[in-house]
Length: 627
Image (cartoon, rainbow, N blue to C red; front, side):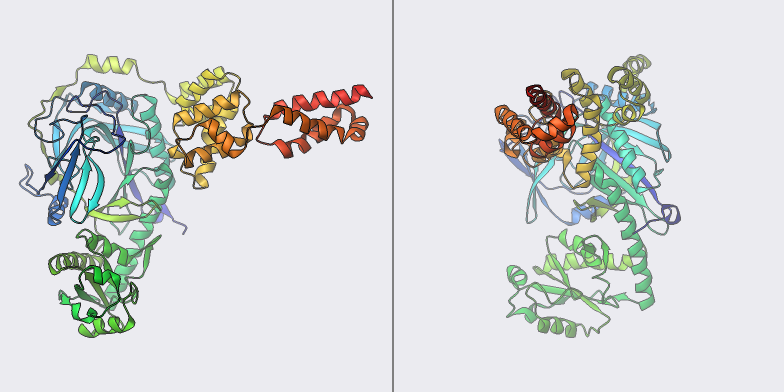
């Protein structure tokens, strides 16, 4: 679908959450490393409830989370303490984390405040033991330049990372405390982004600036992007938890499509004079003899509602792999139940006859839809009430809400969009003054700018303007320098193209290159520098390492079949040369070029081309000298 961004009035903004590579957590002295094996030393349960902020209001997102009445199970380790358990007050703000955050703020041309005040942000989804997240505003009014124009950076906050969800069973949710409290810098842009492509570029640029400090954590899960998207006639929607940069553009496009589809459905429903009946019927008797496993698993309990004029609407696709019925199912899932509807039935073992009996219960016509859930009465009724509220909203406007990013670039409902009522001052953490001398010292040690780095790369490595610009703005620039300083015999152009173009091509193939770590690249280039394989094999090796990241590069080379016995290589080249002696005598030294093509068909990727060329030249020379 071709999107005219100007016509639809796209406005988008980003929130980047990046873990800082500090020695200790934000409010205690615990380490910031995660536990490899989640074998806890102890665990405890908590039940969280929504409370009023200093404004005297309860945040809508917190109010909805409270309805689910979940039990939260927290697992602790030798590396966690009473602060994470919420059994001891937090310590003062981590000074190392403050300095790193101020460095990032200055790189973004932001204005730091005079004093840092920590606030409490109400969060009762279980991601924090105390029911709120601590966050502190450090700087405002920054900017970054993009090809499409200026993007303002509204705020930079320092906050604690959330606990990591590790399991869900029924109404209980398990969290690991090792991640809770790791310092995060949160960067929020203004809604100045006007295209999906610009959103991706801004995220890449912010990520590169963060990595240029050398003081942020690397690897999957250490950086997360949230995207705020709105269009004319739609609503502001926040999509959380994007970990894959290449998905950002796709997520923006899919959210635009979702809102445009919902606007179409709203108009269609109003034309049909569709309406919602708040009558929940017990349909269990219809399924006394059912063969549906879904219903049997729920003990045969089935409850349903009728949506007048909704036939065909629930089956309408609004995002890749998701229909309007999927939107409603998100609300039912919050109560631990699945949702089925007549746009997709008969299915799940439910027969045509059972569907007809459901419709007769509501006197439903061909224009109507019936929605059912299989669960015990209390949960079923709460789930259906939530579904009905969402259906009613569909006939009025696109709802403002928070959604979670899905791996295919679509998104699913999480909760209502939070408001100002979720914030109030933190009384346990004292304010921190930011003095001018401290800022001057940090400013004097800022990393070099893009332009300075580009000029240096041209002079030091002999790169042309295009390649120097490409790598100087790339997130892998420090890795490039490390490789070049370690292996001087490697061509700089090859290293640049590998870290930029090759990775981009692999991403286009759907290869999850974000799984690759610096060590994978360093080891690959080390083997290449020692002529263990030819440069043409680099993509194949990287693909192999993505699928088996724990495998050594040595092993990858062996598994792919790149190791070549040099005696066998020389014999192969000698055999080819001996079979072409007439051709060599006719062409003389010029025979090397054509013969090189013949040899490379056999050895491409296994042996470096320079090595092959040298052996071939020697063998041809021997034939010519022998006459």
